[in-house]
Length: 234
Image 1 (tube, rainbow, N blue to C red):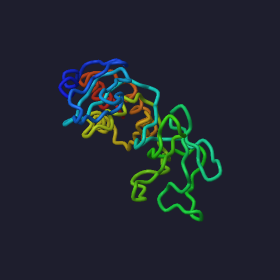
Image 2: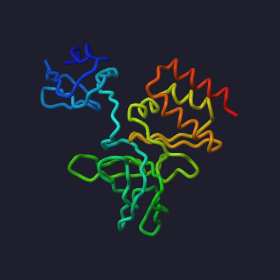
Image 3: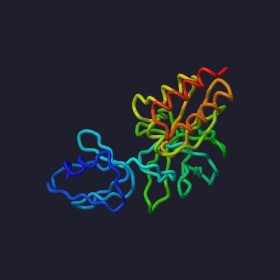
Image 4: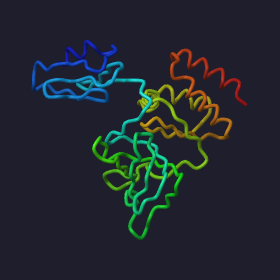
């Protein structure tokens, strides 16, 4: 199985492709786009197969619609208050729920100050096709760890899920090149939403335009564009 998958790394796979296990005790970790079914691995998304040592595989696809997955961190927009629960738009097929107790230090007396229209950065604890997605804004130790309500004075944009993964990659060259154009703060959600905050509104609009236009460029084309914008910027 591992050898068969490794041979396909870097190639385009299509939904319905199947890989069978020769050794049933072989361990393979299936990431996005792959699903294990008994002694087989099924491809359920079209895209390029990637591999991470020692045994993790996933499909990188240019998907635009977000499907919630447990453990993923996303940027949501609070759309309604319903009793003790906030309804949050995460860009999926349905709204996610967020309890007022799912914030650091929150109690029945000390409720978080969350208003309709606020941006929240949270993590899915429940996400499957049979249940409503559920978000929390704290980690397993009860700490906020960067999650919660945020977004004052910034700009929220929507990009493809493939570009989001490039922004979140360790030592991302794209992030370093953007910060070289204009210093900025950035929050990236795996649901394709990016929040930017720079020195001025003009800088934020320029950075948003660069992000949206560089997706299908080669690294050389992107670097040339960023240098040109950086030299011409006021």
